Amino acid sequence: MLSDTPGLHHVTGIVGDPEAHAAFYGGTLGLRLLRRTVNYEDRLQYHLYFGDATGSPGSVFTAFPDPNADPGRAGKPGYEAVAFAVPPDSLDYWRDRLADLGVEAAPLDPDARFGDRGLTLADPSGTRVELVEEPTGGDEAAEGGGRDPWTEGPVPTAHAIRGLYGVTALPADPYGTASVLETLGFEYAAESGDRVRYRAPGDRATVVDILDRDAAYLREGPGTLHHAAVRVADRETLLEWHSLFRERGYDVSRVKDRHFFHSLYVRGPGGLLVELATESSTPDGPPGPGLADPEATGHAADLYLPPRFEDDRELIESQLPAFDGPESGPPDAGDRDESERPR
Image 1 (spheres, rainbow, N blue to C red):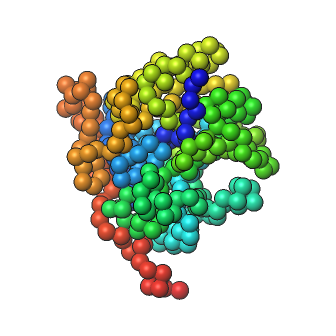
Image 2: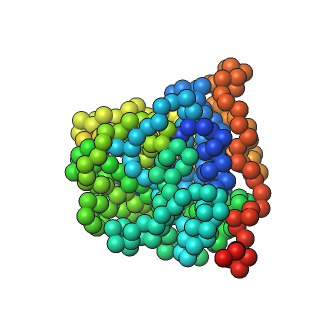
């Protein structure tokens, strides 16, 4: 019997200018730029990884920058929003920080979100981003337990993002997507209006909300989320999932070596693209230390290429847009004490 997934591994979006988005996710939100690498399906396109101090699965947001593409449009079958977990009593800090940095943010309606308190905002391409207070993310996060922030960034530790909270999905067939989630081990938790919540049994990044509403069709491009990935133990488990999905007639890819992990992609009857990704970078090994570059003391500065691309490094680097990435350093002016804020 296949074991349930404990929750999300990462979420991937399509964005525009890499500089602007590195500044937003690394600077404004305070995530660490873990890896500056390339899309393994298109080696002349960046793939940027952001996350916590070690890049632990469940904390990671990745982006494909495509500055020359036409803007995308969120819709069916796709994802409407990615949510990050922040500690309790941190929303006032984030509201002030975002206002200081010129980022518009609005409160989430807790009555429509199962009591969740949070903020909704957009990245420079228009991707919907949410910051949601996670009651279990406070003291445990400060002490470790897989919910550590990146404390070297511009956001104070007490308020820093702890990882992913979840995603909101817009499937073409909500019931078909619910079936896929239940197969993966997510359980029905609640519903409110046209929003249905499912939770994985793990301790972090466990929420997937399904929206059952009319919406335009997805147009992929900057400003849209490409896929969400869930965690599985190892490559052997991936192969078992591959067999199960094929038996059920789902559109499933072969198992792919992503160098930092192994994965496969599946598109079930709801039309959503879901990735299953291992918590280990070795085929059958235990969970690794995370996706961060162990040689980087701050944000990853060098372009990482897997060995099979090294012979083409000069060509690849000549075709990629240059960018400096987010700055590392102490908390900025947006992080001053509340008593110092002008009223």
